[in-house]
Length: 179
Image 1: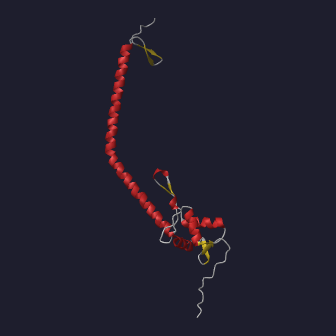
Image 2: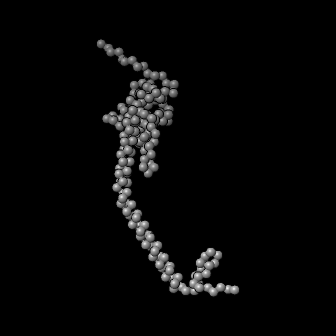
């Protein structure tokens, strides 16, 4: 009751090679050539799409760069005004560290030193920590920020402490002129 086998035999759903190897080899070569032709057609389509969309991609990347630059300018203006800062995530996932407020750094400096400090000393510490203070006189810019921020209080001329500390505020009167 055995059947005669020709070129192939079906074994559990698979086709197993049997007798004529040259026919099988030529069929596989034909299949490989067909697959290579399909790869060539796919590559041609990919190239066509890349050329078609590369111009649009360049436009979108330039537009994104402009928006990122605008965000950085707005952040710089907020820093000058003593606004609230959030770290900005740039392209590639990097974080813009310059979005940290100088007054926040000054607050942490005073907390660490646990004593009132002159604004020029605070400015020097802020600069050491890599925070860029802008303006013609960066220390004076920081002084303005400290004087406008309720977390700080002036204890004497040019010297600031944290408002939470129990430090007496300096007299704000002017010296009397002698004649």
